[in-house]
Structures are given as structure tokens and as C-alpha cells.
Amino acid sequence: MFTSLDLPSLFSPLKKKGIDISTLIKSLTAYKLSDNFSIKRAHSWLMQPETREYYDLPSFTGKTLYRLMETLGENSGFIISGLEDRIFSRYQFEHTDVNLDWTSLVLHGSASPLGKYGYSRDHRPDKQQITLGITELAHPINVPTGVTVKAGNVNDVTHFRSTFLQSQKKLTEGSLIIFDKGAGSKQNLELIGACRHDYLTAKKLNKSDDKIIKTFWQRNPIKINPEEAEPNHGIYGIKIVKPGSVTYFYFSEGLEAQNLDALSRKVYRQFMEAEVIQECISRNRKLPKKIGIANPLVKISYSVQTKLVEMLEEAGWTRNAADLS
Image (cartoon, rainbow, N blue to C red; front, side, top):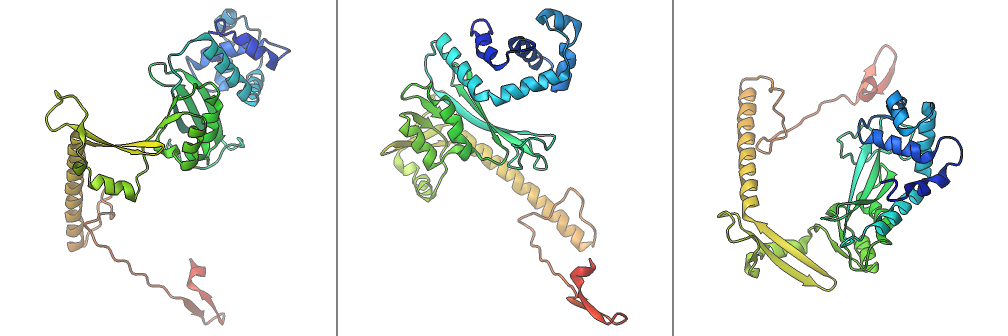
């Protein structure tokens, strides 16, 4: 891949002295495609005699890899643009429709200036993180073409612009931009339209959509899935055409059955928990640890008693009860 995409000519301007940068990147890429642990462990892996012999690597310290990572990070825009140029000139893709998505990575440290607290996909709100935006050519190509890195508190709506614009110059007019509704906003949709592309995203429902859903069956929905589909598993849809956009509404009999079954199990579980809570109250016992009080079938009342002021006769002064805690 380094040879076919002529990557040495892309990386060579970034480092003039010392070990050849392309050799370092090739060997480090091999490590990330195999063990894929820390940069410190990468150095140990690269210093193995067989690895050094295969990549013709001289002996070097771990600081060399850290300086390499700093160089790649500082020039990430230049590198990604160069990779795009080489990929698109090397291959004749059948389309340039793209999938955009965003995620986050937990940081086990506090040194990164991009490290911020935000919505954690890793369920670690106690850790700082960074957010990533990924662009890939859609099915059946599925080739990644871009990546953007932002602070950990940047939401998808805000992050969308930089991720989209990074690869926009390589998209042909009328390309389909596919992303989830978390990044949808009026400004982002207008940006896509201004670049002469189409978009496909899940819709954030509002009150006008609720009215359409209530009259779904009166609008004569069309059955979408094949006739040989299982009974009671039909999928029906309607299309609402507006100036500049088309909205599709779908109803799935199979999904409805799954949701009702899940809801039935949840209600039964809450009913059984309510019975356990009532029995504990009646017998003046503690609740089992696995039973919470957030049950819609249980009515809870709270009462608080506190002394607002306490007189200390010996000292001859007063203080609030809150000061005693």
C-alpha cells in the first residue's frame, strides 16, 4: 500500500533528518495492526531483532516514536488531504456517497488540551475524553477517507461541519450524505444543500410529525417488505413530500410486537417489585438491595425535620444546624 499509493513522497517532507519517517510509520502501522497497545510497548515490539531486521531499523529510543506521533498530529490535515488525493486518483469509485459518524475516546490522563468532560459513549463520565468524526465511502466501497478530532465536550451537531467539509471537495455533485439524527440541525442540512448534495438521516420528531403519525393508517400506507414475509411482520410506509425535502414514515408489525412484549415484561417486573416493597413496609423490614424505589407503581412521600437554629448556652451564641454537619 505504501508503494501503490506513493506514501513515501507524502511523508518525506515532514522529517528530513535521522531515521526515515516512512520506515518508522510502516513499522508502527504493522504494530497497530497486530498488538495495538501503547507507544511505549510499540517501541519494545519494534526493537525485537526480527522486527528490526525486517524493517531495516536502527536502534532508537522510545522518544523517537513520541516525536513521530507529535509530527503526525501537527500535520494531520496535510496528511489526510494527501491520503485522499492518492486514494481518489488511484481508484475509480462507483460513487462518492459517504457515511458520517462520531464517537469518543476516554483519556487516561489530563495532559491533552483537547481532553474535556462530555457525553461518554464508553460510559465513563468520570474521565476526560476526545471526540472523533469519521468519514467513509458508503456501501459497497466502505473505505475510510477522513477523520477529525475535537475536544471531548463538542457535540455531534457542532462537530458535523468540520467532518463534512474535510471530505467535501472529493465528493461529486449529488452525493448522498448519510448520518444519524444526533448531528442533524437546520444549519447542517442547509450546508449540505449549499454544497449541492443530498442527505439521509433519521428525523427528530416534533408536534407536526405526531399529527402525521396519528393519521398514519388514514394515509393509505404501502406495504414495503416482500409478500413472502412472515405473517404479522409487515412493514408499511408513507412519503411526505415538501419543498426541498422528503420525509418517510414507517411502521413495523414485528417491531411493534417486540416492543409490546418488552413492555409487558417490564410492567410485570415492576408489579412484582411493588409487591415486595409493600410486604417489606407491612413487616417493617429493609428493602432488598436489588429493589429500587424508582417504581411508577409505588407512591413515595418524603418529610424532613431539622433545627434551623441551635442555642449553645455555654458559649452564649447561635449557629445554623447546617454548620454542624
